[in-house]
Length: 204
Image 1 (spheres, rainbow, N blue to C red):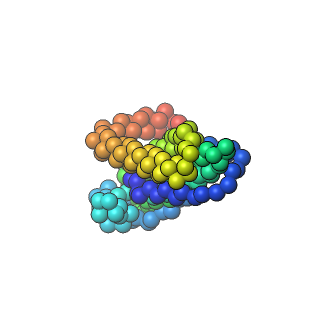
Image 2: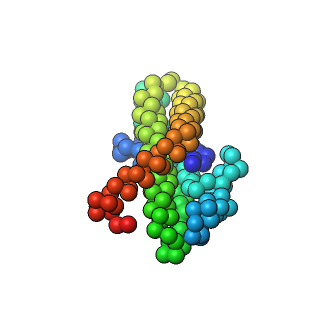
Image 3: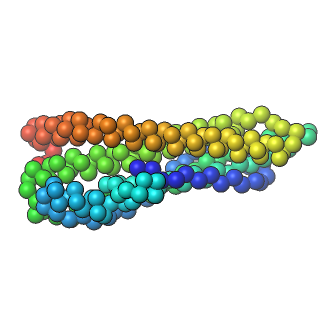
């Protein structure tokens, strides 16, 4: 799940062209216990990170912060975007099951399938964020020059707000699709994992 995005606009002198948008991420884990799937589910509902947007707890969460630095330059009475750099800071929260050694074999297999899907889901949010960070960089750099830098600053602010709104919509759309397909996806992943175990390609 995604948390709020934030844009920071910084004025400054001309800098050399920058690299593409960057993303830095850190992981933290919350402990859960239980030997049965019912106990695990209750622990996820009770201990999972709570999203401010919904007030509900989830098995995983991703907090995203967009930081945008815009460098303005002037030439012959024209104001232009000399450079734009967008970075994303992500904090991913995932569950850590503490009772694996005491649980039945079938429970371990189902948990491994679920935990892998939770991680994939959260890391997909990172991909969406970086895609929109690159989009924001490209659009800021391509803004036309203005005779008044104040007008260009307003263009930058409007462009940033528009791309970040697109980002939020993309993240929410992804969550909706994932929720609709959850059961069929988990069953498909579980069948695949069992096939891999039977073939000796995965540890049981």
